[in-house]
Length: 116
View 1 (spheres, rainbow, N blue to C red):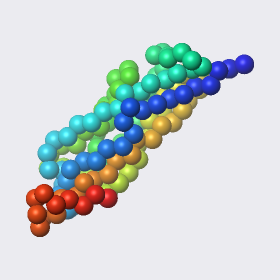
View 2: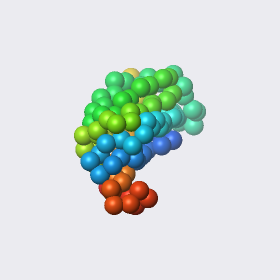
View 3: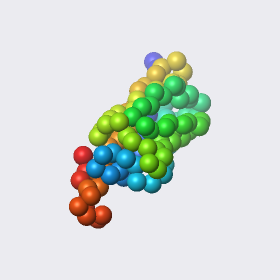
């Protein structure tokens, strides 16, 4: 009998600060660490597959971490989105989703924001 695999992200969602046109207000970088458990044992011999990003968000990965970055002045192509992260252990692939959204600051007041 094969033991079940549990895959967890330490951060499953993030907001990027932008102006009302989704132009990034400052360079920002956020990450999620990946934890994989088979049965009752934490495993570190998994692989992170190819991650497709878009909408102006750059994605990089290391053995246990995926980082999401945006550059100051870049325009994010949508208000919200999801990035799929494939994790493979012992030939079994689990796809986790990282959700993101823009925190839209209006031009009316610097401290007033509209979250989408």
